[in-house]
Length: 218
Image 1 (tube, rainbow, N blue to C red):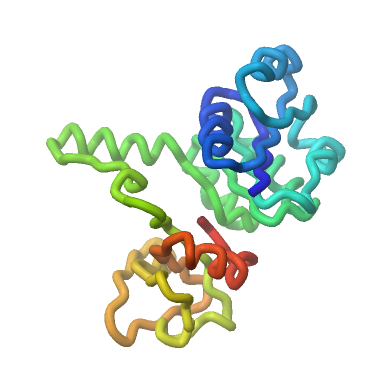
Image 2 (cartoon, one colour):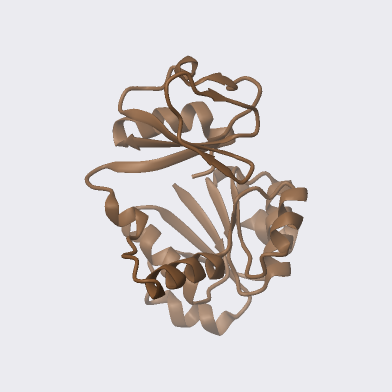
């Protein structure tokens, strides 16, 4: 995959490093030239000096060749603006980080469906730990080549789960209908705008991406 990351703060750098370790092609867009110079010897990736919320800069990042744009800087408004610009330029997927949960509804109204709220996730984890619950990182529970994959159902994919005709080595494990999680049983159906979560191995993930790429959420 080719991943463009807007920002070079600590989270962005950690994300870039993990993506590079997994063999992905990464480009970091950052306004601070000195920050780029400091990271250039540390990260084996491309750098683009400029404001990631400017159309000219994101256009230079190559939306046609990019699989996903991560707008994950420290400022919510800048992230939202960069995401909107990226979407208008044709980036296939756009993921937006926000700190203030109040912006989540704004993102939804703007069509920015893939948002990450790290503070909320961390708060839930810390509250669970404080109550004595043992907390596992979801990714650490997966072994071998298993991965999560998600897509947002449209009218064409709505209907009984068995009618999805999924590739081998993949299975629907959850459906989110609005904020309501559903654990599908026999005869479960999918409605338009449901977020469908699957568990799949590497043999199925490529086929799922080909089929649901335009609707993919994870």
